[in-house]
Amino acid sequence: MTSSKLPPLSTEEHAAGNGLVSRRWLLRTGLPAASALGLSSGLVHAKELEVPDWSTSPGLDLTGYGQPSPFESEVVRPKLPLFPEGIGDGSGVSFTPLEKLAGTITPNGLFFERHHSGIPEIDPAKHQFAIHGLVERPLVFTVEALLRYPMVTKTCFIECAGNSLFNSFDEAQQRTAGEIHGLIGNAEWAGVSLAQLLDEAGVSPQGKWLVAEGADAAKMSRSIPIEKAINGDAFIALYQNGERIRPEQGYPMRLVVPGWQGSMNVKWLRRIKVVSAPVYTKDETSKYTLLQKDGKSRQFTYEMGVKSVITSPSPGKELGAKGLYQISGLAWSGAGRITRVEVSADGGVTWADAMIPDQTPARALTRFQLPWQWGGQPAVLMSRATDETGAVQPTREAWYEPYAANQLFHQNAIQAWAVSNNGGISNVYV
Amino acid sequence: MSMSKLGSLLVVAAAAVSLSMPALAQSQGKVVSESDLAKWDISIGPDGVGLPAGSGTSAKGATVWSEQCSACHGENGKGGPAGDLVGGVGSLKSPEHIKTVGSFWPYSTTVFDYVRRAMPYNAPGSLSDDEVYAIVAYLLNRNKIIADDAVMNAESLPKVKMPNADGFISYWPLTKQ
Image (cartoon, rainbow over all chains, first blue to last red):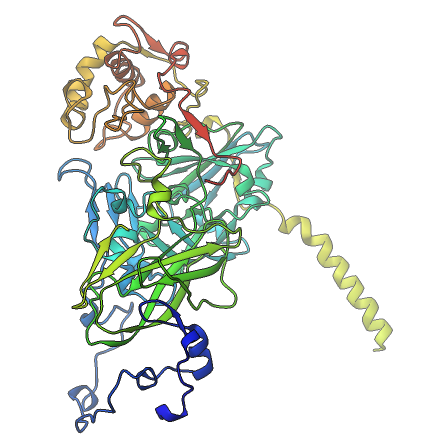
């Protein structure tokens, strides 16, 4: 295709200021050619192609469990212990390296971690899961027993309520997109309906809440409204992206409560107790509550707010030559589907609609894209998501307004990346 | 075979399948008694349901504290690498607020629940119920919530009114933020 066959870029196809290009122009032309944007002075000739060594002798033997290419060894989860060494080892987080991934599914080995007392080494043959409390008949299940049930399958994200905590600092922290926003992962989970198991146990009319508890040394526990399971979408996952859940994700089983605070998706699930009221565990009183300026704290803020982040370009993925780039990122909402993602290249003065799929999934990651013509000028890139309830991602200032200093939970504010005239990218507050 | 005969055979087959359904709906779980679940059933509500027998005072707690807790949580519950558990009462409206057991936690029962399930970090479950009551009494006393001679047990602990008990706003049922 030559540039003369492409429709010209009209004024209205400059979708927003500072070089954002309309998705309509892309739809009209198919794949964009840099020359159509007037950015290329002509095609460059490549050198003669040689036959590489790997094409002239047999490769490696079969592998029992495949590993990434050694050339991808930099694609790992950055780790952040929460306490000094020797104090609380195993308690901390590691981040999904969002800026190094594409698509929407998080590979199992790169799915973020948050442990409150390390990763238990559970023998699945000895693990048991109990349902008891306000039920007609307390039941206990082995893993083997749960595997006999019909499987439910759902793709959804799990996001730590403390995700993006680094943007609660007074000064913008210079970290990658994953190191700021990577306490989220998105996977296809398969497992057993919790409503069915509760039905078998026979929930009494007084049973209104569930206490879910893990088998780790912290015996992490959370109170969960029973509606999330009965006539809801909670389930017990045994598989993640087709294989058995990894130890750091809750092997052999975890609770999944789509769209709700990560810590409610209790890993290494050993027990669900049906109770009449929340039990106010440490992690729904001391932690995962949101202190306001007036001294009161928001509690039971389960749903994760509508949010998005540009993963490319982003810190560590500096721009090279001037020309056409694809702005790409992720959007999600604990309330349901993403209906709109807008992108700005001028710090929020003008916005353009990014491309998203026609059918976006509920409570799962959506990938958005928009072409951007960078002419070497400074820019501030931002994305703003809207969900099916009409909720719009807030600015950092609007998000922070009700909260006390250092309040870090449920941070879903708009992320701004500053692009300098040499293509460097940094985290900024606008 | 005629179509009508085939049809009636299918009806019979369908009836046989539906008769077998109750067996399919049987649970794959095993019935277990609450007493057999006793070692696991460690959740304690704010009403005190689930608190075990036993008791403790802050004087006994001070001994357990220095042996088991102070390395991470500091002498007197302050200044340790794992964060302060004492102090800050009344500070929550201040920009320099300090969240501790005394200033922030709404229920005393949560302290017992958490210490018993998860502490000490390297050996959770190693403390006796008396020792847990004593540690809870120590923390409440150092936060000036209970008197020096107060005895904490299943009766007295749920009656302790925490300073920030009324400091929380529930966002469930679902409330948009």
